[in-house]
Image (cartoon, rainbow, N blue to C red; front, side, top):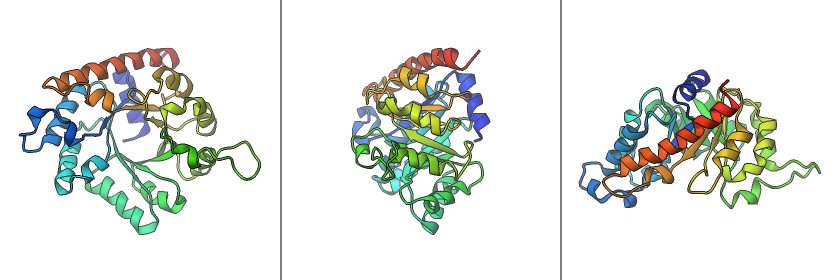
Length: 275
């Protein structure tokens, strides 16, 4: 999917919502457990209920890997269920050198046809560029995450005596590897104070922002500080939407939760983008 196609979907749906399909078999509604593939059936109903309200779906690959071969099958079936016009993210957090990254890229972009994959930058350019070699595909690079451990490395000051943090050097260096039509960045919503610093370094790139909702990030703040002329934001919500109910009405409640977010996003698009 191109940047222009993604932006068209944002304008059409008045939404920049990404729904995380972090589907845990232990949290599935009881009535689905007798299904042939309970994880897929849960995802199918979530997608059916919310596809008109979001512009992206993001399966967290760990939830599927942990189930072995049947988990990979559930993931493939889920991917086939997602409408073609919706952006797909393999939240895999891969990143290794040379042939290994090439194989990861082949797995997610050719065998499973995801539009994008999350990648860790720690090993540098040669661990990221194999993902960028795939036409029409995106890298979503981890830049400033919302977990407590992000303080361990991302927030370290550089040794050159400047006021720059390590995450800013990651942004500065990696932005030379690809255009804003090939690379996005993960920036946690709980790091709202630093969004302006991110935008100063990568003004044109899309930001994938987890942490809104269950983790307490502010949608208003991130939208105000992070939006650019093509929106430039994909706001991820996982648990707050897909686990809005554990009963037979789970898909209905998921839609209601997604609709609430979409309606708020429509207001921010009107304020900051649409004239």
